[in-house]
Length: 310
Image 1 (cartoon, one colour):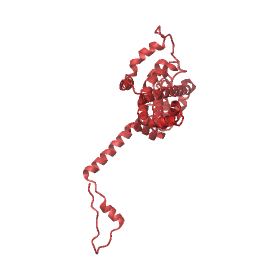
Image 2 (cartoon, rainbow, N blue to C red):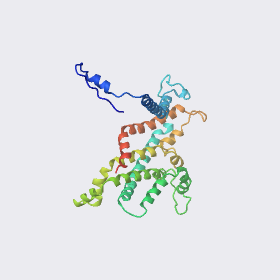
Image 3 (spheres, rainbow, N blue to C red):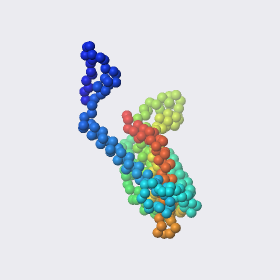
Image 4 (cartoon, helix red, strand yellow):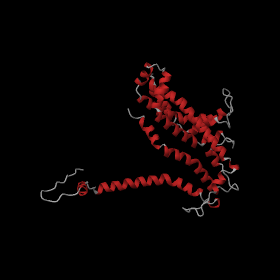
């Protein structure tokens, strides 16, 4: 919209700076005001849609255990008894959280180990079919996890003569399948990062006496830190929330992860579902991830977008 600068006619009193700014400020049309209101309304609806389930989970966790099905927005009285039930020894929830931390950490570390090497090779090496390799990697991540569940179950229970292993109730049975969705994310994200880093950086380091490995470790890896950090956060969250593989391959209560243990909570009888305790466990499992995302949200966004700039 064009704006008109006001001039002061000769002989008249000068306007103040604030009056000039007010008069020069372009006025919004009705269409612009409607657009702004619609945008704010849309943002508000999205925020409510995202926050409301978590808010309801927190509210439900603060009720008395006997009021698990209550629909009141404010618990009356507020109680933390559900959190005491969650950490009751019979639920074994501390062990489940430890298992989740172990599996998520090991899976993330293996994802980085293999993903960084593969991404660097795909970014630097020239060979026929590189685009096909990248397409296969991302294509494999599109398969529903349920399609590989039965073959993995047969494999991990020693049903194949060529692979006589029994990994049921062993952590690796949950770690290896989880790599199937962590590795494609890592390879694609870091390949974009390594591509945008000029190869002259490594060449200059090698001129100064660095070996290729040293140049990669001291020059390339620090520059790719935003992408690596983003991959670590997203992979850890995905593995932390994984349920199907952990439920299938780790049925022993001592090896259960937190999401699986949460689904196994029982009440005083088989027909009594402890809604309040389940909600409290959900809060315990979700809050650390939520805090991590809020703290590092700028780094996550930067890591996801920086690799796309050439």
